[in-house]
Image 1 (cartoon, rainbow, N blue to C red):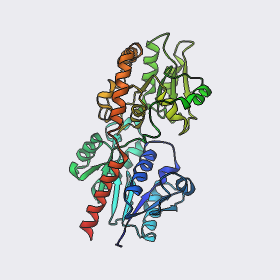
Image 2: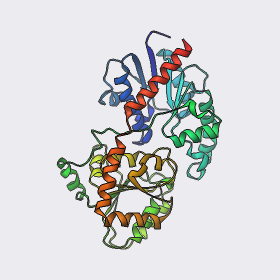
Image 3: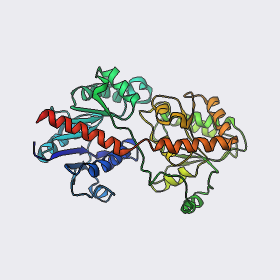
Image 4: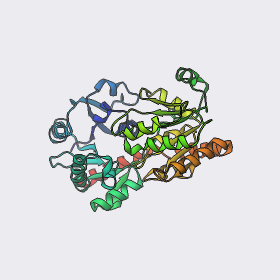
Length: 375
C-alpha cells in the first residue's frame, strides 16, 4: 500500500439509465473528490469523456479509465479484478456486489434487498442470483454501506450481519439544481404546455413496483376539475395494468406520459408542480420525493419501506396500493392551499438535512479505519 490511499470505483452505472444508483454515485463522489484531496480516485466506466466533462470530476486527484461495457459476470469476474491490479487500487468500491475473486480492500454499497420481501417485482433468475451474491457481498466486504436505515436493518436481518458494521450513505440532492421555483423557467413550461402550480406530477420508470396503476385509479376517482397529471418515466416492463388503468380514464382526462424529459428539464417541471405523488410499493430510499421536497413541492407518498423515513412529517402518506386513500390525500391538497404551503416549507427544510458531504465524510472515515487496520 502506497503513501496515498487509492480508491477505485466501478462507475459503470454512469453509462446506463438515469436512475437512483447513477445519481448516487455522481453526488457521493463529486463530494468525495473535493473533501479528500489526500486520496487518489480512479473511476472505471465506458463514457470516459462524459464523466471528465462533468463538473467536479476534473480535479487533480481524479483519473478516469475506460472500462468497456460488459455483462455483470464479465465485469465482476474479469474486468474489475484486472483493473484493481493494473491501477494499484487499495480499496475498490462497487454497487451491490463485490468482485468474484477474493481480495482485500472491497467496499460495497448495497442500496436495498427488496427482492427478498418483494420477489414478485423481479425475475426469478434475478432473485436467485441476488440472494446468493448480495449475501456473499455483505459478509465478505471490508466496508459495507447502504442508503437508509430501513435497508440497513433489512441487510442485517437477512444476511446475519451486525447492523453497526453497515455504514449509512444517505442519498441527497444538489441544492443548486433542485430548488424552489424561479422566473427563468417559463420557457420550459411553455414548451410543455404547462403553467406553474397548474399540474400534478410523478417521476419513475413505468413498472409494477412503482404502481402507477394505483395513481391512475385515484385520479379517476376524483372526477372532473382536477389538474393535468404529468408522468415522467419510460415504460420499462410489466406496464399492462398501468395501460389498462390509463385507458379506463374518462374521456377528456388530461394525463401526459413523457419519457423524454432530460436532466435540465426535470428540476423545472418538479418545482412548478402543485403536488408531487409517489405511489411506489417498495423503495430502498426514494430519490424523487426528496428531489420534489427540495424544490418546495408538497409530497404524497405511500408509507412503504424506506419512504416514510425519507419524507418524515414533510409529506402526506397513504397505504400502498390504496387508491381511495391516495384520492383522499390528493383531494385534501387540491382544496387546501395552506396545507400545501405548510408541506412545501417543511419539505425544503427536511431536504436540507440530506447532504452528499455527510455521506462522503462517512465513507472517508470507513476507508481510513480500514487503512489503519491493514497497515
